Image (cartoon, rainbow, N blue to C red; front, top):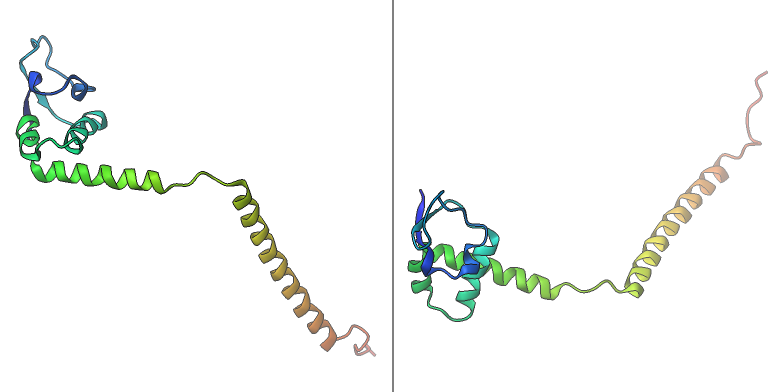
Length: 130
């Protein structure tokens, strides 16, 4: 299912990565097989600037549901990007220290159990082979 677009109706940056038929004149309709991320971004930015979803949908020949999905994905990605913190060197040192304390605690527990096992069966209390 190919969509038809009027090249003049879309902002130039929205055509980034678009393929056109060989020898097509500017102003002709272009078949859109796949939307590049750049083209989706430009359409979503138009929606975020306040353009009518209905008008944008008609202009770019994409369903309103698809435009809403693109907008939701863009907003979720923006939120995730804003939540991401830069790595703090003190945080990294603390994480390393906590990891090392865990390793040492396990090692101490293993050594204690081994010592208890050896205390129950000392080496000097073996039977002779006579």
